[in-house]
Each structure stands twice: as C-alpha cells, then as structure tokens.
Image (cartoon, rainbow, N blue to C red; front, side):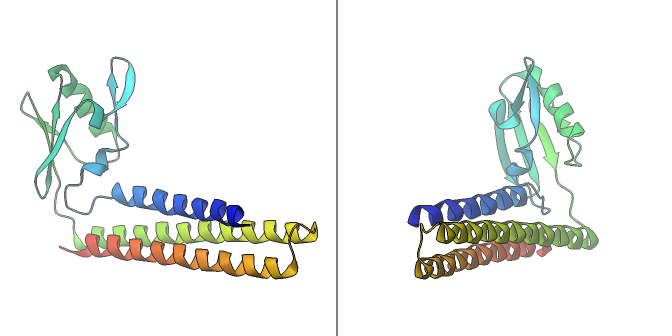
Amino acid sequence: MKEELKVYEDKMDKTLELLLDEFASIRAGRANPHVLDKIKVDYYGTPTPIQQVGNISVPEARMIVIQPWEKSLIKPIEKAIQTSDLGINPNNDGSVIRLVFPELTEERRKELAKDVKKKGENAKVAVRNIRRDANDSFKKMEKADEMSEDDLKDATEKMQKITDKAIEKIDKAVENKTKEILTV
C-alpha cells in the first residue's frame, strides 16, 4: 500500500512542479531569466534553448543581457525573442542583446494575478483528480480482496492527508507569486 500512496504523491508533486514552472515564465515586471526557458533558437538547423547558445545575466532589476557565444547567433536569438509571446523588443549593440522589461501597469498586474489564481485552481483540480483515482484504485483492491476494509479506510485517510499537503503547497505558491506580481 505504501508504494501505491507514493505513486500518487509523486503525481501530485509533479503537478506542483509544473505549476511552479508555469509561474517562473510569468513576468512580474522584474527581469527573470526563466522567461526565456521556452524560447528556442535555430542553431545550425536545430531548435536549441537560448541558455545553451549564450550567457544570460541580469545586471539590473528590469534588464536581461544575453551574450551569445557566437556573434552569428545575434540575429537568430533576436528573431526567436520577437516571435515568442514575451512581448519585449530585443536591442543589440553587435555583441550582446538587451531585453528591457517595462514597468507593469496596475491593470496588467491584476490580470496576471488573476491568471496565477486560475493556474493554481487548475493545479488543485488536477490534485483532486489524482486523489479520486487513488481512492478508486483502493476500492477496487478492496473489492478484489487485496485489501481489508480497515486498510481501505487507512489508505483513504492517508491519501486525504497527502492531498491536503499538496493543496497547501499550491496555495502557498499562488500566494507568493501573487505577492511578487502585485509588489511595485
């Protein structure tokens, strides 16, 4: 039974990881190099993450500097950033690319905060679905006499505790990201 619980707990942890990855790509007015994580550059015919073709640094709170390892990559990196949904126009001086993040308007901050809440709710729904699947699985095991009624009750209670813990972590992540977004 411990193994089954662990499988479902791992699924819940993956849900939280995915949520945190999504949160990392939401820009909150401050320069965060993770906004570039999903952007790929055409590097000799292969779509390659920006992090693998240059050095990324954050010299100021609202600026990211990308220093490509090869000067020939400046144009492809600029093109990749322009065609992404980042909404920032890259500037280059021939050797580095600068991304300057504008201050977010109050309205945009509220929109982003709403989006964060929605993503959090979706993650909670996913966690509850995992719990439901686990409980269904335990009931089947009990019906097939692979588990006693007491074990079923015990497994269901443990699953609920794991679910509560996962939802608590999601709520905390949503709260932290919302605070980050709304802080001017």
